[in-house]
Length: 304
Image: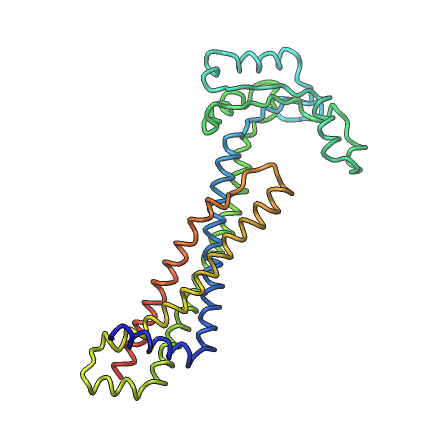
């Protein structure tokens, strides 16, 4: 009997303020979709980090005739200098760290350059000897690239040592900033959703002020009076959370897996199975925040 009365009050409240309830659903949907997108972006960043960091290599660029650094002095790296680098890579000192390496000559570098910039006028003014001969080194533990850098930096015939991880760090830093920006926007929108839920509950309570007065006269407790209003806020937010959850999974299914994985296949992407961790989080956030907003709103109203 008591449960039926509470549910009846919840239905009446939702029906009387349908337009405002729809607004709550939409704002919650948009807010939690931003939260879901931020979570998915963090998952994708971690996926790409694992994929690319394990494949990151260290490049030892050798001198060309056009380099004027102290270790080059405008002379191309000779056979003795190339042999010295190769011998160091095969030495007992570096062998425990080096998984594999290969050497790229001027001609091989030029061939790759032409393929990469096909149709670009820069190809016509570039000569093979202008491109560095390079040792590409794959480490057993990519995080130990500092050993290669310390070993070959500043020795004759070596122009520079470059760790691909440093470039990846800058890329992932940018992606991380974008992800945190989405989180901040989502947080602001969640605050807006809580304020709208609070306003909705106050309007609902005001429209039923006579019923509330009668319940107080017959001895109803504050908890009994508050429960229908809190449930109204939770139900409205729950609809928005379910829509946001569906949108988050759909983003991965149709955009990430259906488009990006097909058009940009050279990296790893999160799967739908991984994205399924997002809906429970969104539902929990939506329910908890709406319950808090509704509780605060109806408690303040009943004190007046």
